[in-house]
Image (cartoon, rainbow, N blue to C red; front, side):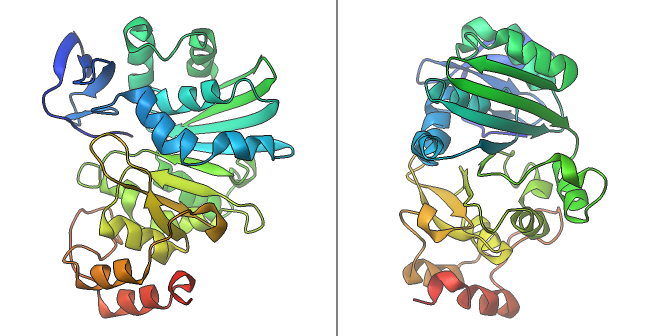
Length: 302
């Protein structure tokens, strides 16, 4: 469920479905033949995960001030670079992390584990990842850190819809304090970027528990989708070739640079701003109804 394509990567080894590629930064990553996209292009898996998730979510600071279990939803497990970077970056803290990963396939993680030496970010976690792949669940201690990691294999939009409808699986997943959102691009995987998906996701959050969701996209359509789903939305940190990304939250205090009225005016004039209601990729300007809802968002009512 992940990542973007970067031209100019160099093939290093081949495998059915995936290959190891050397990025222009000199580090290695995983390329998916089926999607034609490379995971974490340009700066590489660890550097991107640190910038986009660890630093932007202020994970260390939040964990140090958090009491009890800190829940992280890892949407787009892929080759586990995001998840492992988060764990490694906080391993020295006395904390309890419940990491819940989602993906429609375990294949990229299986392939990445086979090439762990070249990828470089598995060091010390290989046995834990093997157990996760074998049973979809692993618990362990790493210094002062306690980890409860589970993997939900399947279609994420369907799972989230079922959770919202309070099916028999709804009690299994606690609401998150942070979401690592790393799905394939909207053109490749539109089902992961629809307004109904993000609305369902927002409604599963605990209003009394601050939660932030960063993602690599800075597109107007993505930001409008998050706003109309109920989130507050801000400008995210630069990473790789992107001058800025996007961060959303259910608490405005988690955003350091909320989108302002100037952005709102640009969105009104954009040719690509109308959220997707169905999993079919298309671009269109804001409808009158969407504009009315967007303009009335609490974020713009200062």
